[in-house]
Length: 246
Image 1 (cartoon, rainbow, N blue to C red):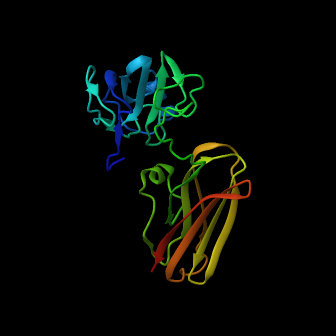
Image 2: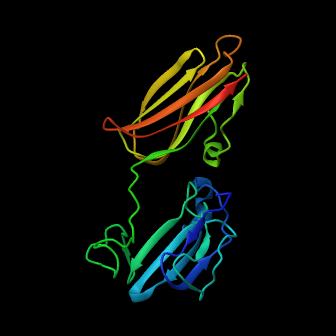
Image 3: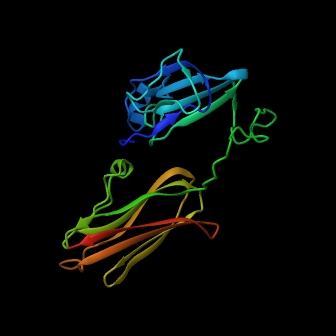
């Protein structure tokens, strides 16, 4: 998000609505009242031909490049991905409507569009990703979730007298019953392996496992953390991360 990820117009059309100036921050009970009525955050609405309309929400504050009445083409940059409005992580929410009715672009039902596959609005439908890892890293304590989401929690190195070695992951698309296996290998072998079952379905989730320091210091060297997400006994995704202890 800091680097800037452009949000592009899906098809030619005319901008019929836009908003900018909403602060980028994680939505929660403490700011729900401020967000009420502006759940989309910073956004753009584009009217296309034949009653079609697209809306792009949660754009980054100050990034919206178009104004009401502007004519856009497929691929025109509208703004950048943000976390404004009712959003708990950076993303763009795309709504597709036809004559005011919300349409699923993967399955349009009886609604069709010229040039698209039957039942789909995609020129080339993206592969479905059932879930997976976003980030992983090490810290000397269970990190704050805000830091994990911000990408600032991971440490490249830790002192030998660190109070704990904690391996953490940030993932998406978790389903109730999924198993997340976290393990840490150190210079002297496996430090831990722990299976965690997800109790509820979560669009995004954070988990951590580790060991406290019991002696004077940790053995120096490289420690590797591994995370595997499994669903119904089948591996969905995996990732790893390393930290140097010296």
